[in-house]
Image (cartoon, rainbow, N blue to C red; front, side):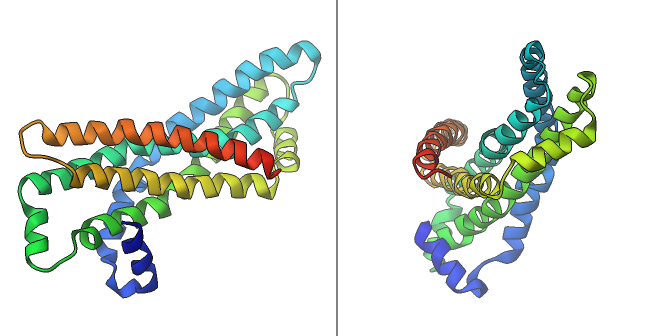
Amino acid sequence: AVSAVVAALRNPRSVRWRDAIQMAEEAGVNALPIVALIGFLMGVILAFQSAVAMRQFGAEIYVADLVGLAMTRELGPLMTAILLAGRSGAAFAAEIGTMKVNDEVNALSTMGLDPVRFLVVPRVLAAVAMTPLLSVFAVLIGLFGGAMVMQLFDVPFYTYYLEVVNRVKLNDLMSGLFKSVVFGILVAGIGCLRGLQTRTGAAAVGLSATSAVVTGIVLIVAVDGIFAVVFYYLDI
C-alpha cells in the first residue's frame, strides 16, 4: 500500500481523483459535526477543570496556555484520529470487505487491475488530506469552548486570545499537523488492510470493521506516545 501511494504521488494521473474526492467528502466533510461537538466539549471540560484548580492561586489566565498547548499538540490530533478510526476506518473496512466477500476484488485482479491502486490509494490520500484539516478545525473549536468557559472566570476573550497566541508556537502547530498526517495514514491503511483480509461468511464484514476500529485506536495511541517521547528528546 505504501509503495502504491508513493507511485501515485510520482504519477498523479494514475490516481482515481474522483474516488479520492468522494472519499474525502465522506471521511472529512461529513465528519465535521461530530468533530465540532467533541472538540467543543473537550475544550470546555479541560478549561473548566483547570480553571477551578488555578483559581485557588489566582492563575486563571494560565488556563489559556494549558488549553492551547493541549488541544494543539495532543488532544486535537488524537481525538480527531480516534473519531476517524471509529467512523472512516470502519467504513473503509466494511466497504472493501463487502467487495472481497462478493469477489469484486478478485474480479479486479482478473481484469489486470491493481486492487490497491483502485481501492486503497484513494482512501489513503483522502484520509491524509482530511485528517490535518479536521484536527485544525477541532483545535479551533476547542479553543473557542475554552474561551467561553473563561468568560465565567472573568477572563476576557481578547486576553484569552493573546495568551494563546503568545504561548502556542509554530513548532507546536507543526508537530500536531505532522501527527495528524501519520494518524490519517494509520486510519486508512488499517481500515483498507482489514477489508482486504476479510474472509468469507456472514459475520466476516462485521469482524473486519470491528478489528479495524480496535487496531486503529490502539496503534494511534501507541504512536502518539512514541511521538511524545521523541518530541521531548528532540526538544520540539
